[in-house]
Image (cartoon, rainbow, N blue to C red; front, side):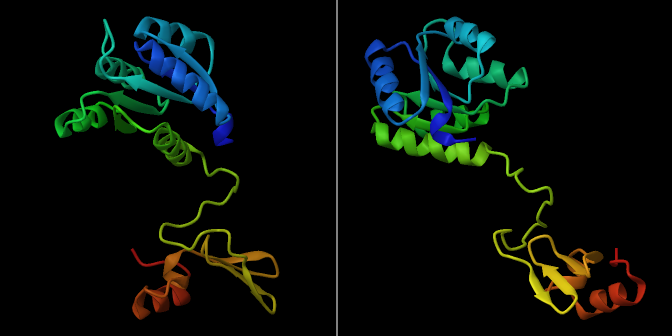
Length: 194
């Protein structure tokens, strides 16, 4: 997802803050809608896709903590950044525990909010541009495979091919931290040890 093209829903009962965030986030390239309450948020989310919610903790009626809990209980994975005048540690922990992705105490610098939005969206973005998933602990897949003769080794996916045909996959045969015994077991049987 192009982060700056993300659709952001601001839910805050403070009209001045809604106007500020609507203008500032819009200038940063985000699509922005701003509403004053949980029912208004529900109405927008029923009609449109939202990539992120900026949610005030102290809303009238259903508060932000309850809204976050309700959305998570319903299986909604939309990222949520909570805003609140209550910046004490217990409130931050409670907000994160009910499912908020980040928490920002008021007053805040709008540039910090944008940085947090981008960070949360980066963590939420699928890394699905590649059909092969890298093994845990492997180098990133931006490295090109190494070719030598008919062989090609891809460190990110931990695969070895010969003339384009898969010969080996997995850590036991290619991982420098694997024990010599596990490498010997794999090379003689073709199967990594349990």
